[in-house]
Length: 250
Ligand SMILES: [Zn+2]
Image: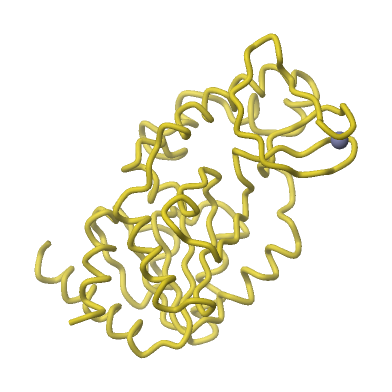
């Protein structure tokens, strides 16, 4: 890592050492090294597929089977994925701060849970959960259904199931969002692998910044979040985050 980046990382580590609480916001960039495609990169999913065809409630009502086939395709990719060193670094960070650590994620891939994080706010849901459109129950269901079984039915009431994810045009769960906003007031707020393109998650670093908290961004490129960051570390997050953890002990 080049010297300038190392010094920035060192400053972030020093702020974390002084902090009593830490919150983290993650996006698709952290799971890229685990083989999960991002959405807005040049080779991202929305370059190949149209979100209006697969990721809206209207599309689901019109053709639930087609939408479920797309989620099955993504479930297969995500099921094979394993947490990478960036996920592991965040699990380590939670170990250090325990209940004073909050991980807010826009990812639906469950990799933070697999790497050991427990205090997770999944703003956009979880691909391995389903929600019934009739009785509203949410439960874990990681099965990859055959085409004939689609769309799947609720095990409680037989109603049509949908993936437990937030689609375009849908509101986030109000309680989750309130919790996320509350945690943005932690002493240190880290933004990792997120482009800052999707609201309202993208407003969290601004809230932290406006409240005078220390904000750091870890990304492969500058983003809409960079202007709110006290430090920006531009390099692969699988490199910078493990290095950050090492610096906490130095
Ligand atoms: Zn039901």
